[in-house]
Every structure is written in C-alpha cells, then in structure tokens.
Length: 200
Image (cartoon, rainbow, N blue to C red; front, side, top):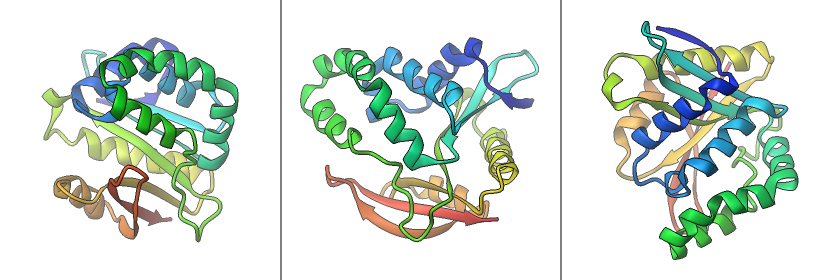
C-alpha cells in the first residue's frame, strides 16, 4: 500500500469510498455530486489537504481530507462556491428535506469548529477506509501520513471532531494515536460532539 497526494482522477474513487464508509451520514445524504464538489475543494483550494491510500492493485482504498487553516478554508469556500454547493445538495434535499435543510443551515456558518485557545491549527475533516480493508491498518497509516503533512506545514497541532455517543471505537482509535479530548460541544441540531487534539 502507498499513500500519496490525491489527483483529480482520484475524486470519483474517493467519493465511492466515502459512500461505502459513511452510509447514513449527513454528507452521504447530499449525494455523489455534492461529495465530488467537496473533495475537489480539499484537492484544489488553498489550505486544502487530500491524501489517498492506494492498494498494490492501484485501487483507492482510503483517504484523509482536511485543511491547514480551517477558518480561512471554509469561509472562502462558502463565499466562492455557496451557490454551486446549494445546487449540488438539491437531490439530497428532495430525499430528506427536513434533515438536510436543517444541516445545511448549520453548514452555512461552519468554520471548522477550531479550538478557541488555538489560532494556527490544522483540521482533519474526514478519514475513511473501504469496508473491505477494515482491520488492515489503512486508517492508522492515513492518520500518520496526514500528521506528517501538518508537521511539514510547521503547525503546532491537529484537531478533529467526532460524535460523543455510540462512537467508542473511533474515539479509542484516535486516543491510541496520541489524541486527547480537548472539549465537548453541542451542534445546533443537538448532536453532541467531542473535539480531540494532538500537539506536535
């Protein structure tokens, strides 16, 4: 297995991994078109980070996406691409109107949920592995590689957010990698979240 910078040709495979790994999640509800736009933003826009894990058969089996400057990245993306993303979200709105509209309202003001105590800190937005590669340390390798990208940018810390409840295995995965629970918060829709952070 190899881990490398993603390319435009990888986007469809990244979306396929996302759909398989995050069945039932909000972003998945928005559909493949929305996801392609999102991951292209991580790939092409300033401060975006998008890394892929490639099998020996040259198949994308996982990815890690995020940004080295969450507040700048999401505010600029919203300013430049809000209408495009709204159009891409229409299929999801038609299928799940109440849930999607509420979540999109929250997303309109999303800035990455950066810890208030830190200014220069990177965000890991998403890490996903194909279900058929579960248990083969792909996620661990992607996380270590992503951390190297953050260190190369000379940033002091990396954070992520994840669900507080029903998520013990994910939280334990990050804690084994040296992440600490920095704080808890509740999203506007009532979803209770943990913010985890690792200092370098």
